[in-house]
Amino acid sequence: MKILKNLNILYIEDEDEIIDKYAYFIGELCREVHIARDGEEALRIYQEEDIHLIILDLLIPKINGINLAKKIRQEDDSVALIALTAHSDREILLELVDLNFSSFLIKPVGRSDLMNALLKVSKKVDGGRSVPLPCSCSWDSKSKTLFCEERAVTLTKRESKLFELLVEKAGAPCSDDEIFFYVWGDEFNKVITNSSIRTLVKNLRKKIPKDLIKNQYGVGYKINF
Image (cartoon, rainbow, N blue to C red):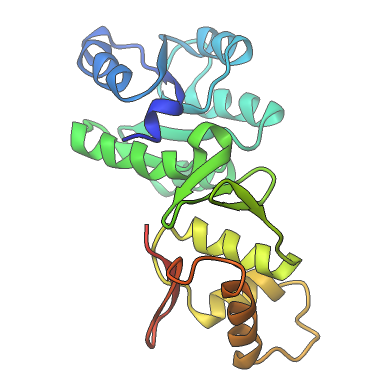
């Protein structure tokens, strides 16, 4: 909940009844909510305001949700997008994946479902930068910097990649295969073993609070959010 209070949200919906139902609810959660009733108005607000997260109905007037997302992605490939759609056919889902939507919800949307989606996405966004972590630490997602007790921790390239993966998994354990792919994905010509991962984690743990990274036996490594 605390993370959401850092965010400016653009909510795009053309039905007044639905706006009345959700606008106040969203506004209570975030720093500021901007409301647009069509794609043209939404694009103008997005270009004029500092928007961190966009919730958009795909069937909106003037510029539909998919085309609006394409225009936004031409300017910004990192702003978080949550789609509201009445349908979940394969073609629509593939377009959402291509446009890097963070989540999609099937209408009618319950408040608890919307809340869960906002919380999940906000952990990655937090104003586009800081992800709060246990042990008085945080992760700056833009500069790829780990802070512990407000001091930057110097990480190697591989340590940084590993930690980035753990943050993105948001508390779910990372298997060896996932770590291999994410950390050594551009070095498949090299011989990488499980001991390479053990050594990488061991060296990383020397630089951070000992309880920040947990080993779930037989499953993988994780951060306890």
